[in-house]
Image (tube, rainbow, N blue to C red; front, side, top):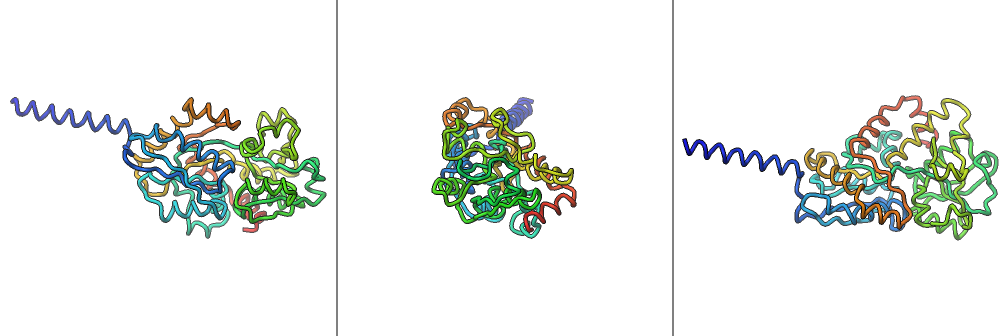
Length: 342
């Protein structure tokens, strides 16, 4: 009887221990978690990636070392391909890419042979962004409507990035006359080109990116200004400042539907992504750790000092948003594909 009782007690302790371990999540003790950032240093994506990396480790069970690693190229496609085909499937490599990397294979199905965003596992989103056009103060265009009647020169990284695709949508859906100059490594390189007057502006760039680089941008004493919002509702701060919406140029319901679908990617402007095949327990552990990180008072205080907003969303929310986007009606997708020459 004693042996039976002892056996039951041991089994009970084992079950309790296993339950406690499960509640705490998968341990990453003595491991290094790499955040692969799909841009060069100094831009908005890099800013958020490094901010998360500085605080993420203490919320992950086992307190691993978290290292940001810049992997620029192909508008973030280098990181996406690495995630899908090379990265370890144990939660130790997390990608951070531009939202265009998630949208692009929806419009260009051949890309899904390289990576399929609908199969990624989303840890969460560090920020829901409002994208803007930022142009020189001496540029001739004064309102969004001017883009339809006068040529302008806008800098961009590469096709598939927001800095290319957003002005392309203005051209091919709304009738703009923008010349898009590509080849810059990141948004920081484009803004430096604006300072040198190589180009007149940049579109499809996050408000947070501009505010980090130019904290006084809304004070009206800068060489350049926020010209328009590429969003359906707009950011409260910019709405109060009277910055117009590019969506105001939409002439038909079909045009507006295209903009609603395309601008929807701003809801996951800073997505943190795991490869397919990562165990569900590891995904859950990292999702909860990121949720805690984005509420961390130290992170929020640091973000405030950096003059950036933190408007996160959960991994489950991003996963659902991506799934909905990949169920967009064929007519709308066809119009977007045509606009972007896909």
